[in-house]
Length: 463
Image (cartoon, rainbow, N blue to C red):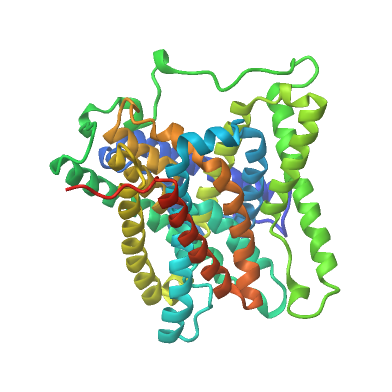
Protein backbone atom coordinates (compact mmCIF):
# COMPACT_ATOMS: atom_id res chain seq x y z
CA UNK A 1 0.00 0.00 0.00
CA UNK A 2 2.92 2.34 0.68
CA UNK A 3 4.07 1.90 -2.91
CA UNK A 4 0.55 2.76 -4.12
CA UNK A 5 0.56 6.06 -2.18
CA UNK A 6 3.93 7.34 -3.31
CA UNK A 7 4.42 11.09 -3.28
CA UNK A 8 7.48 13.24 -3.72
CA UNK A 9 7.58 15.61 -0.75
CA UNK A 10 4.57 17.06 1.02
CA UNK A 11 1.63 17.98 -1.22
CA UNK A 12 -2.09 18.66 -0.63
CA UNK A 13 -2.70 15.05 -1.68
CA UNK A 14 -0.42 13.81 1.09
CA UNK A 15 -2.54 15.79 3.53
CA UNK A 16 -5.70 14.29 2.02
CA UNK A 17 -4.33 10.76 2.44
CA UNK A 18 -3.43 11.44 6.07
CA UNK A 19 -6.80 13.04 6.79
CA UNK A 20 -8.65 10.21 5.04
CA UNK A 21 -6.81 7.58 7.07
CA UNK A 22 -7.44 9.48 10.31
CA UNK A 23 -11.14 9.83 9.45
CA UNK A 24 -11.43 6.13 8.68
CA UNK A 25 -9.76 5.21 11.96
CA UNK A 26 -12.12 7.53 13.86
CA UNK A 27 -15.14 5.83 12.31
CA UNK A 28 -13.70 2.39 13.12
CA UNK A 29 -13.07 3.56 16.67
CA UNK A 30 -16.68 4.70 16.91
CA UNK A 31 -17.90 1.35 15.58
CA UNK A 32 -15.84 -0.45 18.22
CA UNK A 33 -17.34 1.79 20.94
CA UNK A 34 -20.86 0.97 19.72
CA UNK A 35 -20.37 -2.79 19.38
CA UNK A 36 -17.84 -3.88 22.01
CA UNK A 37 -19.28 -4.00 25.54
CA UNK A 38 -15.96 -3.91 27.39
CA UNK A 39 -15.02 -0.74 25.54
CA UNK A 40 -18.36 0.80 26.57
CA UNK A 41 -17.81 -0.21 30.18
CA UNK A 42 -14.39 1.45 30.18
CA UNK A 43 -15.75 4.57 28.41
CA UNK A 44 -12.78 4.53 26.04
CA UNK A 45 -13.27 7.38 23.55
CA UNK A 46 -13.22 6.53 19.82
CA UNK A 47 -10.43 9.08 19.25
CA UNK A 48 -8.15 7.13 21.59
CA UNK A 49 -9.09 3.84 19.90
CA UNK A 50 -8.37 5.44 16.52
CA UNK A 51 -4.99 6.64 17.73
CA UNK A 52 -4.06 3.22 19.08
CA UNK A 53 -5.05 1.63 15.77
CA UNK A 54 -2.99 4.22 13.91
CA UNK A 55 -0.04 3.49 16.20
CA UNK A 56 -0.31 -0.26 15.68
CA UNK A 57 -0.92 -0.17 11.92
CA UNK A 58 1.03 2.96 10.95
CA UNK A 59 4.74 3.63 10.31
CA UNK A 60 5.57 3.34 14.02
CA UNK A 61 3.96 -0.10 14.16
CA UNK A 62 3.32 -2.68 11.44
CA UNK A 63 3.62 -0.13 8.63
CA UNK A 64 0.37 -1.13 6.93
CA UNK A 65 -1.09 2.40 6.82
CA UNK A 66 0.81 4.87 4.63
CA UNK A 67 0.81 7.86 6.95
CA UNK A 68 3.28 10.58 6.08
CA UNK A 69 5.80 11.76 8.64
CA UNK A 70 3.67 14.79 9.51
CA UNK A 71 1.38 13.44 12.23
CA UNK A 72 3.28 15.14 15.05
CA UNK A 73 3.25 18.38 13.06
CA UNK A 74 -0.50 18.10 12.65
CA UNK A 75 -0.81 17.74 16.42
CA UNK A 76 1.06 21.02 16.93
CA UNK A 77 -1.27 22.83 14.51
CA UNK A 78 -4.40 21.25 15.99
CA UNK A 79 -3.55 22.30 19.55
CA UNK A 80 -3.18 25.87 18.28
CA UNK A 81 -6.67 25.61 16.78
CA UNK A 82 -8.05 24.18 20.04
CA UNK A 83 -6.64 27.09 22.05
CA UNK A 84 -7.93 29.53 19.43
CA UNK A 85 -11.49 28.41 20.25
CA UNK A 86 -11.22 28.99 24.00
CA UNK A 87 -11.75 32.78 24.18
CA UNK A 88 -14.95 32.45 22.12
CA UNK A 89 -16.40 29.36 23.87
CA UNK A 90 -16.14 30.37 27.55
CA UNK A 91 -19.19 31.47 29.48
CA UNK A 92 -19.37 35.02 30.83
CA UNK A 93 -19.25 34.90 34.63
CA UNK A 94 -18.49 37.63 37.12
CA UNK A 95 -15.54 37.34 39.49
CA UNK A 96 -17.93 37.93 42.40
CA UNK A 97 -19.97 34.87 41.47
CA UNK A 98 -16.85 32.71 41.28
CA UNK A 99 -15.62 33.90 44.71
CA UNK A 100 -18.89 33.63 46.59
CA UNK A 101 -20.18 30.40 45.12
CA UNK A 102 -17.25 28.19 44.25
CA UNK A 103 -14.30 29.39 46.35
CA UNK A 104 -13.54 25.93 47.84
CA UNK A 105 -13.87 24.30 44.43
CA UNK A 106 -11.49 26.85 42.92
CA UNK A 107 -8.86 26.19 45.62
CA UNK A 108 -9.26 22.43 45.16
CA UNK A 109 -8.95 22.54 41.37
CA UNK A 110 -6.05 24.99 41.47
CA UNK A 111 -4.23 22.81 44.03
CA UNK A 112 -4.73 19.77 41.83
CA UNK A 113 -2.88 21.51 39.02
CA UNK A 114 -0.08 23.19 40.98
CA UNK A 115 0.75 20.22 43.21
CA UNK A 116 0.85 17.74 40.35
CA UNK A 117 3.26 19.93 38.40
CA UNK A 118 5.33 20.94 41.42
CA UNK A 119 5.72 17.53 43.06
CA UNK A 120 6.36 15.52 39.89
CA UNK A 121 8.58 18.22 38.38
CA UNK A 122 10.82 18.32 41.45
CA UNK A 123 10.92 14.52 41.66
CA UNK A 124 12.20 14.52 38.10
CA UNK A 125 14.98 16.95 38.99
CA UNK A 126 16.10 15.53 42.34
CA UNK A 127 15.13 11.85 42.18
CA UNK A 128 15.04 10.68 38.58
CA UNK A 129 18.15 12.64 37.57
CA UNK A 130 20.10 11.10 40.44
CA UNK A 131 19.13 7.57 39.40
CA UNK A 132 19.26 8.13 35.63
CA UNK A 133 21.73 11.02 35.05
CA UNK A 134 21.14 11.08 31.29
CA UNK A 135 17.48 12.03 31.63
CA UNK A 136 16.34 15.49 30.67
CA UNK A 137 15.57 17.63 33.74
CA UNK A 138 12.00 18.04 32.53
CA UNK A 139 11.39 14.27 32.56
CA UNK A 140 9.31 14.42 35.76
CA UNK A 141 7.14 17.13 34.23
CA UNK A 142 6.09 14.65 31.54
CA UNK A 143 3.72 13.02 34.07
CA UNK A 144 1.48 16.08 34.61
CA UNK A 145 1.94 16.93 30.93
CA UNK A 146 -0.02 13.77 30.11
CA UNK A 147 -2.08 13.20 33.26
CA UNK A 148 -3.35 16.66 34.13
CA UNK A 149 -2.86 18.17 30.70
CA UNK A 150 -3.91 15.31 28.44
CA UNK A 151 -3.01 14.84 24.79
CA UNK A 152 -3.54 18.52 24.03
CA UNK A 153 -0.97 19.69 26.56
CA UNK A 154 1.37 16.90 25.45
CA UNK A 155 1.17 18.24 21.92
CA UNK A 156 1.69 21.81 23.11
CA UNK A 157 4.68 21.14 25.34
CA UNK A 158 6.14 18.54 22.98
CA UNK A 159 6.03 20.88 20.02
CA UNK A 160 7.50 23.70 22.13
CA UNK A 161 10.47 21.54 23.15
CA UNK A 162 10.86 20.34 19.56
CA UNK A 163 10.97 23.89 18.22
CA UNK A 164 13.66 25.13 20.58
CA UNK A 165 16.90 25.97 18.85
CA UNK A 166 20.39 24.56 19.31
CA UNK A 167 21.08 22.23 22.20
CA UNK A 168 17.81 23.15 23.91
CA UNK A 169 15.77 20.96 21.53
CA UNK A 170 14.24 17.81 23.11
CA UNK A 171 12.55 15.71 20.45
CA UNK A 172 11.45 12.92 22.82
CA UNK A 173 9.15 15.21 24.83
CA UNK A 174 6.22 14.77 22.40
CA UNK A 175 6.31 10.97 22.55
CA UNK A 176 6.75 10.86 26.32
CA UNK A 177 3.89 13.29 26.87
CA UNK A 178 1.58 11.43 24.51
CA UNK A 179 2.47 8.14 26.21
CA UNK A 180 1.66 9.40 29.71
CA UNK A 181 -1.54 10.97 28.38
CA UNK A 182 -2.63 7.65 26.87
CA UNK A 183 -1.75 5.73 30.04
CA UNK A 184 -3.55 8.41 32.06
CA UNK A 185 -6.84 7.85 30.23
CA UNK A 186 -6.62 4.14 30.99
CA UNK A 187 -5.77 4.81 34.65
CA UNK A 188 -8.65 7.27 34.92
CA UNK A 189 -11.25 4.68 33.99
CA UNK A 190 -9.84 1.47 35.49
CA UNK A 191 -8.96 2.96 38.88
CA UNK A 192 -11.99 5.23 38.72
CA UNK A 193 -14.39 2.28 38.50
CA UNK A 194 -12.57 0.53 41.37
CA UNK A 195 -12.79 3.67 43.51
CA UNK A 196 -16.52 4.02 42.77
CA UNK A 197 -17.18 0.45 43.89
CA UNK A 198 -15.23 1.12 47.09
CA UNK A 199 -17.13 4.37 47.72
CA UNK A 200 -20.50 2.67 47.26
CA UNK A 201 -19.55 -0.16 49.60
CA UNK A 202 -18.33 2.28 52.26
CA UNK A 203 -21.44 4.47 51.81
CA UNK A 204 -19.42 7.50 50.74
CA UNK A 205 -21.59 8.21 47.70
CA UNK A 206 -24.64 10.45 47.90
CA UNK A 207 -26.16 9.09 44.68
CA UNK A 208 -25.12 5.80 43.20
CA UNK A 209 -25.99 4.06 39.96
CA UNK A 210 -24.84 0.75 38.59
CA UNK A 211 -23.50 0.74 35.06
CA UNK A 212 -26.56 -1.15 33.86
CA UNK A 213 -28.73 1.79 34.98
CA UNK A 214 -26.92 4.35 32.84
CA UNK A 215 -28.67 5.62 29.70
CA UNK A 216 -27.65 3.69 26.56
CA UNK A 217 -26.36 6.86 24.88
CA UNK A 218 -23.67 7.22 27.56
CA UNK A 219 -22.44 3.71 26.91
CA UNK A 220 -22.56 3.58 23.12
CA UNK A 221 -22.29 7.30 22.41
CA UNK A 222 -25.26 7.19 20.00
CA UNK A 223 -28.00 9.66 20.91
CA UNK A 224 -31.62 8.59 20.16
CA UNK A 225 -33.87 10.92 18.17
CA UNK A 226 -35.91 12.09 21.16
CA UNK A 227 -32.78 13.23 23.05
CA UNK A 228 -30.90 15.04 20.31
CA UNK A 229 -30.09 18.73 20.75
CA UNK A 230 -29.07 21.40 18.20
CA UNK A 231 -25.39 21.97 17.49
CA UNK A 232 -25.88 25.71 17.88
CA UNK A 233 -27.89 28.63 16.57
CA UNK A 234 -27.27 30.03 13.11
CA UNK A 235 -26.07 33.63 13.28
CA UNK A 236 -25.40 34.29 9.58
CA UNK A 237 -27.43 33.68 6.46
CA UNK A 238 -26.06 31.16 3.98
CA UNK A 239 -26.91 33.68 1.25
CA UNK A 240 -23.95 35.78 2.44
CA UNK A 241 -21.70 33.33 4.28
CA UNK A 242 -22.44 29.92 5.73
CA UNK A 243 -22.73 29.91 9.53
CA UNK A 244 -20.10 27.18 9.94
CA UNK A 245 -17.77 28.85 7.43
CA UNK A 246 -17.95 32.10 9.41
CA UNK A 247 -17.02 30.41 12.70
CA UNK A 248 -14.26 28.23 11.23
CA UNK A 249 -12.77 31.31 9.57
CA UNK A 250 -12.59 33.09 12.94
CA UNK A 251 -10.83 30.19 14.64
CA UNK A 252 -8.35 29.58 11.82
CA UNK A 253 -7.58 33.30 11.63
CA UNK A 254 -6.84 33.38 15.36
CA UNK A 255 -4.51 30.38 15.06
CA UNK A 256 -2.78 32.05 12.11
CA UNK A 257 -2.32 35.29 14.08
CA UNK A 258 -0.88 33.24 16.92
CA UNK A 259 1.62 31.70 14.52
CA UNK A 260 2.65 35.13 13.24
CA UNK A 261 3.12 36.36 16.81
CA UNK A 262 5.23 33.32 17.67
CA UNK A 263 7.44 33.82 14.62
CA UNK A 264 7.86 37.52 15.45
CA UNK A 265 8.98 36.70 19.00
CA UNK A 266 11.34 34.01 17.71
CA UNK A 267 12.96 36.43 15.27
CA UNK A 268 13.37 39.01 18.02
CA UNK A 269 14.94 36.47 20.40
CA UNK A 270 17.39 35.35 17.71
CA UNK A 271 19.29 38.59 18.31
CA UNK A 272 19.77 37.86 22.02
CA UNK A 273 22.65 36.05 23.67
CA UNK A 274 22.61 32.29 24.33
CA UNK A 275 20.64 30.44 25.60
CA UNK A 276 17.78 32.87 25.00
CA UNK A 277 18.46 33.18 21.27
CA UNK A 278 16.80 29.78 20.76
CA UNK A 279 13.64 30.54 22.70
CA UNK A 280 10.19 31.20 21.29
CA UNK A 281 6.64 31.43 22.56
CA UNK A 282 4.51 28.37 21.70
CA UNK A 283 2.01 29.00 18.92
CA UNK A 284 -0.90 27.74 21.03
CA UNK A 285 -0.19 30.36 23.74
CA UNK A 286 0.06 33.11 21.15
CA UNK A 287 -3.19 31.89 19.57
CA UNK A 288 -4.93 32.17 22.93
CA UNK A 289 -3.65 35.74 23.38
CA UNK A 290 -4.67 36.64 19.83
CA UNK A 291 -8.10 35.17 20.51
CA UNK A 292 -8.53 37.25 23.67
CA UNK A 293 -7.63 40.43 21.78
CA UNK A 294 -9.92 39.61 18.87
CA UNK A 295 -12.73 38.71 21.27
CA UNK A 296 -12.33 42.10 22.97
CA UNK A 297 -12.53 43.80 19.58
CA UNK A 298 -15.63 41.77 18.72
CA UNK A 299 -17.26 42.78 22.03
CA UNK A 300 -16.65 46.47 21.34
CA UNK A 301 -17.91 46.28 17.75
CA UNK A 302 -20.88 44.00 18.62
CA UNK A 303 -19.56 41.25 16.33
CA UNK A 304 -19.71 38.92 19.36
CA UNK A 305 -23.51 38.95 19.02
CA UNK A 306 -23.04 36.82 15.90
CA UNK A 307 -20.46 34.40 17.32
CA UNK A 308 -22.25 31.34 18.68
CA UNK A 309 -20.51 29.84 21.70
CA UNK A 310 -21.88 26.32 21.18
CA UNK A 311 -20.67 26.23 17.57
CA UNK A 312 -17.15 27.25 18.57
CA UNK A 313 -17.18 24.65 21.36
CA UNK A 314 -18.04 21.96 18.82
CA UNK A 315 -15.22 23.11 16.57
CA UNK A 316 -12.85 22.79 19.52
CA UNK A 317 -14.11 19.26 20.19
CA UNK A 318 -13.61 18.36 16.52
CA UNK A 319 -10.01 19.57 16.58
CA UNK A 320 -9.46 17.73 19.88
CA UNK A 321 -10.65 14.40 18.45
CA UNK A 322 -8.24 14.75 15.54
CA UNK A 323 -5.50 15.86 17.94
CA UNK A 324 -5.83 12.76 20.14
CA UNK A 325 -5.81 10.47 17.12
CA UNK A 326 -2.74 12.19 15.60
CA UNK A 327 -0.93 12.35 18.91
CA UNK A 328 -1.33 8.70 19.85
CA UNK A 329 -0.63 7.47 16.31
CA UNK A 330 2.61 9.48 16.22
CA UNK A 331 4.06 7.94 19.41
CA UNK A 332 7.53 6.59 18.66
CA UNK A 333 7.73 3.07 20.04
CA UNK A 334 11.53 3.20 20.05
CA UNK A 335 11.50 6.20 22.38
CA UNK A 336 9.07 4.47 24.76
CA UNK A 337 11.30 1.37 24.80
CA UNK A 338 14.35 3.54 25.42
CA UNK A 339 12.72 5.16 28.47
CA UNK A 340 10.65 2.17 29.60
CA UNK A 341 12.06 1.77 33.12
CA UNK A 342 12.08 5.42 34.28
CA UNK A 343 8.76 5.90 32.46
CA UNK A 344 7.22 2.96 34.35
CA UNK A 345 8.50 4.30 37.68
CA UNK A 346 7.24 7.78 36.77
CA UNK A 347 3.73 6.50 36.06
CA UNK A 348 3.57 4.37 39.24
CA UNK A 349 4.70 7.24 41.46
CA UNK A 350 2.43 9.63 39.56
CA UNK A 351 -0.67 7.50 40.15
CA UNK A 352 -0.05 7.47 43.91
CA UNK A 353 0.70 11.22 44.00
CA UNK A 354 -2.40 12.17 42.02
CA UNK A 355 -4.56 9.78 44.06
CA UNK A 356 -3.37 11.39 47.28
CA UNK A 357 -3.90 14.93 46.00
CA UNK A 358 -7.34 14.14 44.60
CA UNK A 359 -8.96 12.40 47.54
CA UNK A 360 -7.13 13.96 50.50
CA UNK A 361 -7.91 17.53 49.48
CA UNK A 362 -11.21 16.64 47.84
CA UNK A 363 -12.60 15.40 51.14
CA UNK A 364 -11.45 18.51 53.02
CA UNK A 365 -12.30 21.20 50.45
CA UNK A 366 -15.82 20.01 49.63
CA UNK A 367 -18.57 21.24 51.95
CA UNK A 368 -20.88 18.63 50.40
CA UNK A 369 -20.79 15.73 47.94
CA UNK A 370 -17.05 15.25 48.43
CA UNK A 371 -16.97 11.86 46.69
CA UNK A 372 -18.80 13.05 43.59
CA UNK A 373 -16.50 16.04 43.24
CA UNK A 374 -13.38 13.98 43.88
CA UNK A 375 -14.21 11.23 41.40
CA UNK A 376 -14.75 13.87 38.73
CA UNK A 377 -11.37 15.39 39.60
CA UNK A 378 -9.73 11.95 39.39
CA UNK A 379 -11.02 11.41 35.87
CA UNK A 380 -9.95 14.90 34.83
CA UNK A 381 -6.52 14.95 36.50
CA UNK A 382 -5.42 11.58 35.17
CA UNK A 383 -7.28 11.40 31.87
CA UNK A 384 -9.47 14.07 30.34
CA UNK A 385 -12.44 16.23 31.21
CA UNK A 386 -14.58 13.69 29.32
CA UNK A 387 -13.31 10.90 31.58
CA UNK A 388 -14.23 12.96 34.62
CA UNK A 389 -17.73 13.53 33.26
CA UNK A 390 -18.14 9.81 32.53
CA UNK A 391 -17.21 8.86 36.11
CA UNK A 392 -19.37 11.66 37.51
CA UNK A 393 -22.41 10.41 35.59
CA UNK A 394 -22.00 6.97 37.18
CA UNK A 395 -22.15 8.24 40.77
CA UNK A 396 -24.49 11.17 40.05
CA UNK A 397 -26.64 10.33 37.01
CA UNK A 398 -29.08 13.20 37.58
CA UNK A 399 -26.22 15.69 38.24
CA UNK A 400 -27.84 16.75 41.52
CA UNK A 401 -24.51 17.54 43.18
CA UNK A 402 -23.96 20.48 40.76
CA UNK A 403 -20.35 19.36 40.43
CA UNK A 404 -20.12 20.24 36.76
CA UNK A 405 -21.65 23.70 37.30
CA UNK A 406 -19.21 24.54 40.08
CA UNK A 407 -16.21 23.22 38.17
CA UNK A 408 -17.17 25.28 35.13
CA UNK A 409 -17.15 28.42 37.25
CA UNK A 410 -14.03 27.47 39.21
CA UNK A 411 -12.06 26.82 36.05
CA UNK A 412 -12.42 30.40 34.79
CA UNK A 413 -9.62 31.85 36.99
CA UNK A 414 -7.61 28.63 36.63
CA UNK A 415 -7.39 28.63 32.82
CA UNK A 416 -5.03 31.64 32.54
CA UNK A 417 -2.71 30.14 35.18
CA UNK A 418 -2.69 26.83 33.34
CA UNK A 419 -1.86 28.43 29.99
CA UNK A 420 0.93 30.53 31.50
CA UNK A 421 2.38 27.45 33.22
CA UNK A 422 2.26 25.33 30.05
CA UNK A 423 3.96 28.16 28.19
CA UNK A 424 6.74 28.51 30.77
CA UNK A 425 7.51 24.78 31.25
CA UNK A 426 9.65 24.29 28.09
CA UNK A 427 11.22 27.75 28.36
CA UNK A 428 12.09 27.43 32.05
CA UNK A 429 13.59 23.95 31.91
CA UNK A 430 15.56 24.80 28.78
CA UNK A 431 16.90 27.98 30.41
CA UNK A 432 17.89 26.12 33.58
CA UNK A 433 15.30 27.50 36.00
CA UNK A 434 12.69 24.75 35.77
CA UNK A 435 13.30 23.84 39.41
CA UNK A 436 12.51 27.40 40.47
CA UNK A 437 9.22 27.28 38.61
CA UNK A 438 8.30 23.99 40.32
CA UNK A 439 9.10 25.44 43.75
CA UNK A 440 6.93 28.43 42.91
CA UNK A 441 4.08 25.98 42.20
CA UNK A 442 4.52 24.43 45.65
CA UNK A 443 4.74 27.86 47.28
CA UNK A 444 1.55 28.96 45.57
CA UNK A 445 -0.12 25.74 46.79
CA UNK A 446 0.80 26.60 50.37
CA UNK A 447 -0.67 30.08 49.99
CA UNK A 448 -3.89 28.56 48.64
CA UNK A 449 -4.16 26.28 51.67
CA UNK A 450 -3.69 29.25 54.00
CA UNK A 451 -6.37 31.12 52.08
CA UNK A 452 -8.75 28.17 52.35
CA UNK A 453 -8.30 28.05 56.12
CA UNK A 454 -8.71 31.80 56.55
CA UNK A 455 -11.90 31.76 54.43
CA UNK A 456 -13.17 28.70 56.36
CA UNK A 457 -13.27 26.62 53.19
CA UNK A 458 -11.27 23.84 54.87
CA UNK A 459 -13.49 21.15 56.41
CA UNK A 460 -11.80 18.63 58.76
CA UNK A 461 -12.91 15.06 58.18
CA UNK A 462 -15.38 13.85 60.80
CA UNK A 463 -15.48 10.21 61.79
